[in-house]
Image 1 (tube, rainbow, N blue to C red):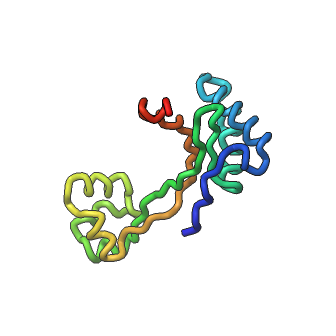
Image 2 (cartoon, rainbow, N blue to C red):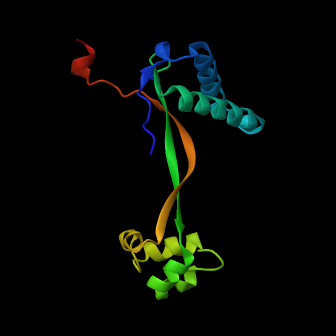
Length: 145
């Protein structure tokens, strides 16, 4: 797995003007509904690409941190699942029915640990999610110092 870039401030980020403009537009569009969804998606994608390429950053003026987090999707090996866990054969169609398999997991019929141990469970990178979070508040005693 590749190392995540160090978090930095917006001032140190390459392309600061571009990042600031994209972040401003992203924050402005995020609260507006409807036809702006497409533009919001485009701006989010561009901002996510910029953060992926140049690293995480903190914008103290806007009071947010911006980073990219990986999102994973579970996948199963159908033949291995059938052979090792015959009771789960109903979860396997031409490919594993992931929703049904998740229901089996929730019901306690099998665990992720058992599936991983037998080489049935794999995880693949599904997407990278842009995360823009407000900066945490300092405790009152520290804020006055």
